[in-house]
Image (cartoon, rainbow, N blue to C red; front, side):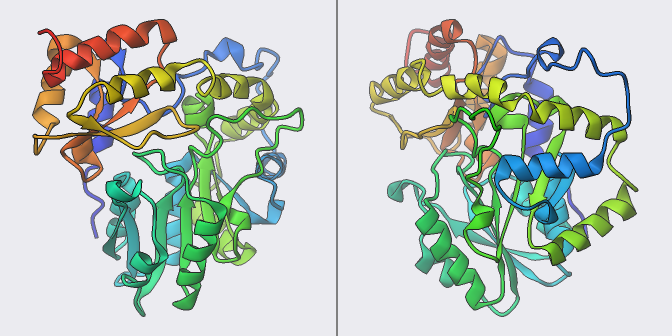
Length: 362
């Protein structure tokens, strides 16, 4: 078994911070430490019980369904490792985020692709899923909102997919790290829209990195039935012994700050940045997309080109603007375009992207 190199993460680690205009990020910029309300922290050891309760409150589930993790990708690994044996089959959406298939592949599973067609607004169809399920299928892995297109699966769609999975005894694993994007929280700090409540065989993973700019804290979680939770907790014990006490303490405190921090993620839907990007795409006949709602990114296809990777990397070097090449998601003729950078910088970033794509003055 081998996990191999995650090409997108290597690319992001190299380029993020090297360009003036980063349109490749899918989430909010990092929140400065001074704004996190942690000035009073005295270094005390955190309580895993309190952190689990806070995550449960945010998601609207019971604490018995929660496994805290070191970010969403760690939670994804826990969920898959708790369920899979070598030789099992895992159905994974495509185009999709690279770790969704790299992790099950590294665990010895056979990966089956489930297409999300741009012509169908990247919607997942139950009949397409059913045709890819078999006696060895253990997990179906999707994202909602979809990374990279931003398409959200409705509750009815998720219920239909969960029923398909149930027919073969499989779990539906939903990565919903982008789920809270675009939503302001009430004073109780509850998001409460998790897909975990859709059906008993739905497992979800999430975290605070994308919607709240808290990636540096590595706060993530898995939500599942208590039996799978127990297996995942045993994996945490055998690999980490425990989550870092400092991380537990800071994560618990930050959960109380989410109503305030959610103002920034809600602003992405109301300050005109998405509309500005939509107008930019609409005005260029060679570009097309399905405009997303509630997330700060979309997936743009370009007609007349098979692979944009070299063009986009060259543009980062020469013009200082970065978008995420679609080759990392399985569509080399496309790119993921984000707009979470400061509003006053977006027009110049798009002008530079025009030059990179050959759609504007060089």
